[in-house]
Length: 489
Image (cartoon, rainbow, N blue to C red; front, side, top):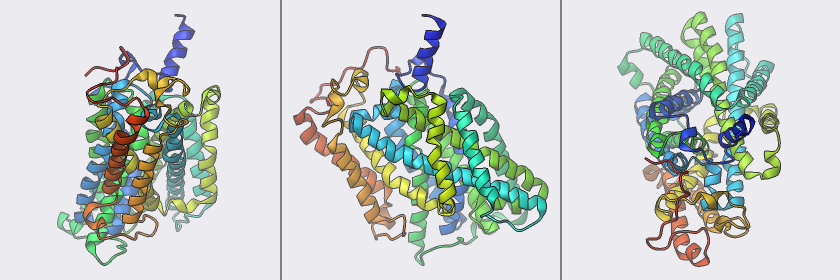
């Protein structure tokens, strides 16, 4: 094979057009754990910890962070990392096995295109706020969060993220290697300044910033729900990262080290900072915590650090988009496609800058969708397909694929998704915070995940196998793995 042809095949696998062979994967256990930690200790942990402090004090907040994150991360990783890590397939190509070719395109639009654009806007605005607070700190003037610098900084951050994402996963690893340790140092410095002012008992006794309900149980469960949503918010992205892992065990367990462990520690530090400094906005902490010197350094790194998260979610979103939009879109140059994807986040920054202050509402809405998707994924891969995929079916044209279901859509999976989303909103409305008594015992994400999984499993057993949809195994029959493509554990 000529060098140019070999490079073409390498890029095709890297960008999700074909499965990655075990020899093409770059991460072992600690490599993926480090990458996960670098992702987790990104600026969104500041936002999530700050949002938690609105509802509960530090003592309850620590419990909410640990409980919520472990639930969300385990369920999200089980439904995406295990199959993608085993077979090396792009995450939304894998979803064809449960939603159909056109159905997976719809899920991609809902869970990645729309939500990624929101995340890019939020993180971009955080970069802009950091730059604005940096200017006010240096000039010793009051902060103005509506200043032109906030918008300009957000647009600059989105542009830089696009430029880095064009360079592929190797550049992402290099950026993470610089940013993640810097953020850890900032967190340690924040904790140092806080510990100089307050004893541990004083910290744990701090009240919540803006509890909306008089009933502490409701406030606590909302805090838990925010952190479950934080864990589930990884669902659209970690499958495409885990396909770079050597096998399915390596794809799953590092999530507990990185996305759960590192994120939880970062959120706890952020919880303390928000509670003691009286603000849920991380950019304000850096200005208030340690004086001029620390503020300048911390805000500078905070502005830069947003790039790590923005680049990762942008990269994984676009490689999924390439698989689902057809051959015509695959012919669009990689850099141009990333640039076009960033147009709408730019528009959100310009038209809806208030999305930053309503961050936790946006975050919890994502869980209404992602929790149901996780439930469907677990039911389909573990219980219906018995952890076996036929890769030829996944990559076959719709007219010839057993995964075509009904005109490329699986009505059963879509009905299960709608059921999971509906029960979530009935139990807990993210927009108004209205909730039922059931919410205080079960959260909203767990009923959503469970109901969606049960509906998908039950109707697939009753209807899909009879109609011949999806090539599900009958009885003890197992689908045959494509020889040589699945990583062996």
